[in-house]
Image (cartoon, rainbow, N blue to C red; front, side):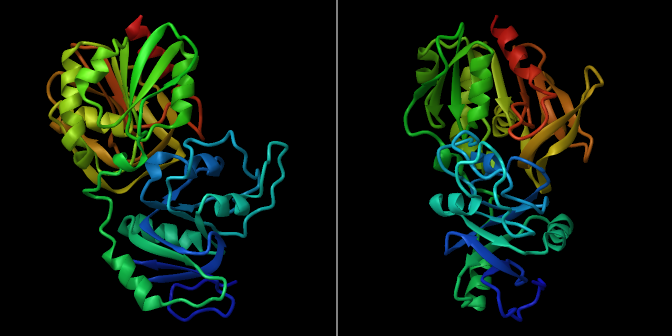
Length: 372
């Protein structure tokens, strides 16, 4: 169908996207028959749609896939990053592609219904992505109604009223409710603070020889240190780091005093920067995709990385003892830091890369070397 960005409804439309500025995009609905509000962003990855939708860092967001064909590998119970999807919905260019993969367990559309996710297909995702690129990620509402009946003014009002992720603490929505273990009897005991941890991070820590204890995001520092960890891991997660930092920063500051090796990824990186006295800010676009070039300032090497973040660390607010270790070659934003006087480092990107390239897997070994 021809997709427009005006209010006149095409005859066969069963899905609609309402942006906070009143813009309307029509399409076909898939997945759950309902509506959802959130921040509409885009992801440039060509693979890994199931992993992306179950990444807890996408809490509060509706994902526009720039790759037009979604669904070709179907779904399975292994390619997930959390027990249930954290994203609020998805937007796709073409109809969902029938599965054609030996690992397929169920059709992607059925998986969306099972997991209460709303999708809108047949959308001009290039036009929508360009709009996001130029104006930033907007609040919006997506709605799937098989009968094609939509209350457009109400949807526009709901989109305009959505408060946005700036100032939201979403880590408490996706963190575990009680501690649990991951990995067989590893040589090194790591306590991972769960701000929205991806399962592939835990897999890599276990593969590197770690027995991991995952604890809720609000766990006090005394409880963590009482577990006698060899190292501490600050996980990825969603939302505004300044909001999560209200309770996370004092804990991290106490953990830093212990002198134990500490490694942070994504939100964990931002929270570490805040604990050191640095600042973060909301980005115009953020980085979401599996093809992001990052430069290691110490070695001069460039890594192609997987990323998903809408906030970043402001490098020149970091204290003297913190050294910027990596920068984005897209926009020069901060991608990593390390302390000069303690075994502490963090990166903004995702070295576990699920989906994405394997350039940065060595960082897990670096963490283990610090514990060794």
